[in-house]
Amino acid sequence: MAAPAAKPHLVFFPFPSQGHITPAFQLARLFHHCHGFDVTFVHTEHNRRRLLRARGPDALAGAPGFRFVAVPDGLPPSDEDAARDVAALLLSLPTMVPHFKELVLSELPAASCRRLLVSDVDPILRAAEEIGLPCVTFWTTSASSFMAMQQIRHLVAKGLVPLKDAEQLRNGYLDSTVIDWAPGLPKGMRLRDFPTFIRTTDPDDAVLALTLRLIECYRTVPSAVVFHTFEELESQVINAMSDILPPIYAIGPLPLLLRETGGGDDAASTSAGSSLSKENRACLDWLDGKRPNSVVFASFGSLVKLTGEQLAELAWGLASSGYEFLWVIRSDQKAAGGTAVLPPEFLEETEGRGCVTSWCPQEAVLRHGAVGAFLTHCGWNSMLESVCAGVPMLCWPFAADQQTNSRMACTEWRVGVELSEDPGREEVEAAIRQVMGGGRGEEMRRSAAEWKDKAALAARPGGSSWVNLERVANEVLAPLM
Ligand code: UDP
Image (cartoon, rainbow, N blue to C red; front, side, top):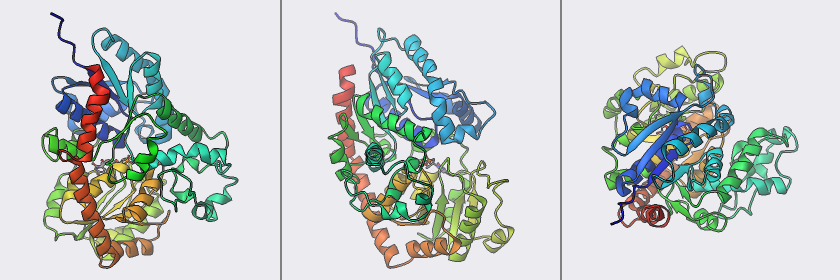
């Protein structure tokens, strides 16, 4: 009788920042829980240290068939800022390649198990190709932003990127240039709505070059691309993408799928299991005492840093709106030249009306009935968490894919209002009043409630994401079994 086949083994290697680690961890748990695959989840040493500091040894304890490992990241161990700087992280990725190859070749040799890499890191995907390890890309942000990224090579070919001069960044050119030929994207897309990697005048810009390499890799190297989204939300772009990519699968929102499949131990654990920072849960108690839909929640993800002036304008906008607020100001958020100090008059004026914390259980906060609006930088996890909770948004995108996500939320899904690049206090105040009030606010709350229902349906048995999870198992993973 033939010996039983060894279990397939999935190696997860996410881009080493919170917004990529969280959904990768959720997907890993789904495949482990629903399909019984063994998982090796790769962190960088910086993030390993942060996990231990935030949550102690339990954070890396793993479980039978699910283990964590860490690879050196080439960043100075004491430099916490570098480990949160996207450009520094991008440049550090190639240094991880030899460690990754060593891990696979020594610990997971092809002879002893069937293996598959799941990653969004292009040097790692290319390394996998070199050593004959099959791979799948997991794109952790919106399908729309992926399509917008794919258009960058066409923008370059048409001479629109790089920009002619710095003046084009200031004189309204990004707003007035409409790109109506991008497949699956809305017709009114402005150059402003494309990923910010195009905002350069330098033909040799390193980040632009990396972006072009990355999108080429996703088109050619993996055997499939998994998107963290659901079909109903981005149907047009998903259909259009089928023409340019390997087989694609829309699987999301992952926190809902984890709950539906029983893969999350409890509701709070779906993102907490991967949080690199210590969560302050007391803000949930603070919310308990508030009326339904009465609180504005402001949070800018794990990387965005506001300038001192932006911080002050936001503070005064919140204060003069008159609404109660919960505001996440990370401890590494230093205003230019100092610490993130809020104006003392602001603290006096809003005493008892606001709660400021350095890191919260955001998904649970958004699901709390007291939260009426979300002021967000439009990171994709934040947006999906808001969609799942049916909370309308004030969209203040800063960089990367956030501009595209904001555009989709405001003009297509009708669940957000767009703030300008550098909103002053009056603009912030007016936008809060608009989202929290009647009229347009009412309309957004209705749309948000509809999307919440559609997201829930997608994640239920028979829903589009549930079916796509099974399809990945049958079409991509089963050949490994
Ligand atoms: N987050 C959190 N607590 C906070 C702020 C953020 O748990 O106080 C989580 C948030 O729920 C999301 C992730 O951090 O899952 C941030 O990812 P996102 O894609 O929104 O933004 P990024 O950090 O990549 O810019």
